[in-house]
Length: 168
Ligand SMILES: [Cu+2]
Image (cartoon, rainbow, N blue to C red):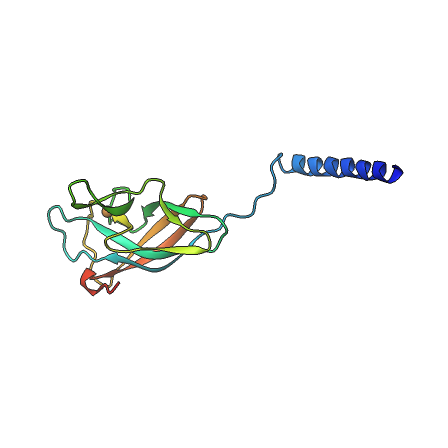
């Protein structure tokens, strides 16, 4: 009986210490630093010359998420001077009701599964450039910043490839 009473007291004092610790960090449990997904094999479909209605292209890559929770690619910003003033969009290619393939924004972003990866590739997920102001020759480089659902960002460099050389 005496033992259980002192155990209960110890329990209460432990609770008091935990509450005091929470108060010090603003009443929120400490959260680990958010993880930034990695990007590899980043490339952009080359646009050798601007033609009417064709001033657009897509960026492709493989994103890996080493963390224990899913992370979404929710946005991207062009950082290449003079390339485009139009905000980039996160797209997917889907079959429409009419059976035609079409592009659309990805609701909620592209999921990079926990401890997994996702590949953006032609005919599937891509980062969309609209209204290009200058061509993107094969072999040239484009820079952009990826934005993730956990608030992290990653700067990437995409090399321009001819779509016909894409082997995937
Ligand atoms: Cu698109």
